[in-house]
Amino acid sequence: MTVMIGLAAFVLVVAALLSGGRPAAFLGCLCLLGLGCVIAISSLRGLARSSAPGTHGA
View 1 (cartoon, one colour):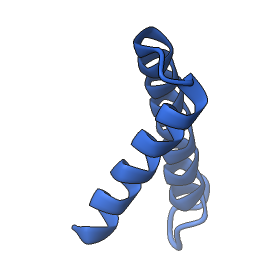
View 2: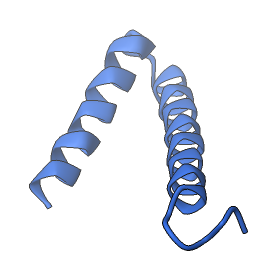
View 3: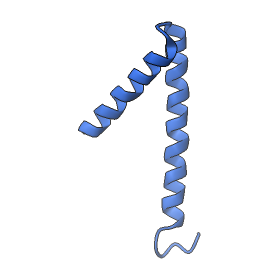
View 4: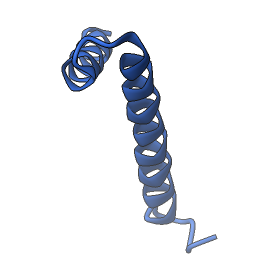
């Protein structure tokens, strides 16, 4: 749970730094970071599923 809070805080800080204090840019940065997280998680899940023992690539 603490790791999830830390990651969420990290994403908020990065978005705030990249936006330069503009609210619209902050929301845009959050959306792009969230999209990147979704892509990364689905890629990792697919990789873990394909390399799991007993699946044989199915």
